[in-house]
Length: 422
Image 1 (cartoon, rainbow, N blue to C red):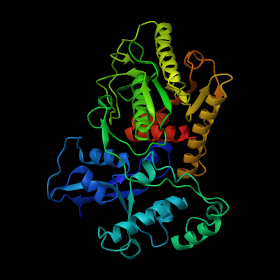
Image 2: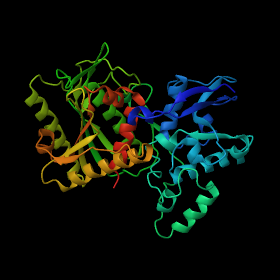
Image 3: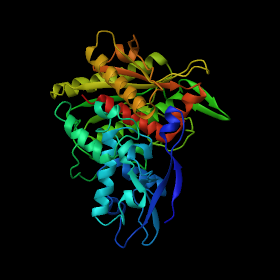
Image 4: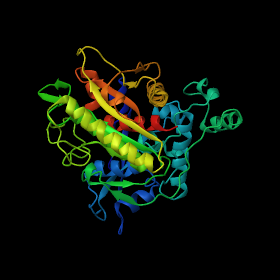
């Protein structure tokens, strides 16, 4: 079996040491397509597994699999340390460990694994466990388990403790059910055009996604070596990924700023351009004031139209990247309009999500992102409840890792989505 070593992406986003893992590769059988191969390994239920499979193997939506050719699956292979899944993978979360354990046991029962991971010391960790926006069940840790320490007890002992604690504080894990087929949206580009419907948990909710700046205004500009980093390009990429996440869960997102030839890009350095348009196809005016009112007027017209249909759950989300002194690192921080209690609630939910994720993956690192009121045009002049998000300091070299790494941009979009759930 040929395995390709990879470094887990969260270390780039949050900083600190790295965990080494290897990628599982398998041969395609006669009649295999992308979906049938991933379905065999219980991976097709989460759309991001499909995206990751295409990325790993440099495939697009029209690619055919070749019989006998080895393809890398979105499954990372760890050498089991004989103690616990948590110590093996460097993550104390109990629900996550149980999900990994059950995944390995299911594949063993299906004959896709030759031995139990505790016997052959080979542990498989599917991509969706840590990285899929639909996998929202692993953000909470049972209090009894937190105090056990990394290597205390077996997974079976933890299961017993979990059962004992369930009556006090049950943990809701999303049910995995049959999903419908993908839909196609050209704005995401060829690689990500197909958008599977994972569930309808956001049905009836509307989101107006506004990527900052664009057209004649690149926004804040940073430099990394010989590369120019333009705020509008990176904010747009995260906005597209968030929009796609929302679609996967049955919500209705409107991409207010649009670039028809720049889909979701998996490059570190995004080439600046000025051909962005707005919803409806109009170009962006040179005047900053005119550009801002163009956006708010479009959102307000859509808001009134949807409100007339009886849809009251509507949210505006503006995505930006800050610019400060290059030595200053900042965590994701948020603004909401003065007096907007729903906007404040949304912003606080997103902040709590980021804080929990930092605690989960980098205990002790701490999260310092703030939530505050701010008198900004896109918050003041739009009718829906609003949240204004600053992702990083584009001038700071450490913060730049948060936005130039495409997998980190996907994590930002995933965590923003989690924060939008009630």
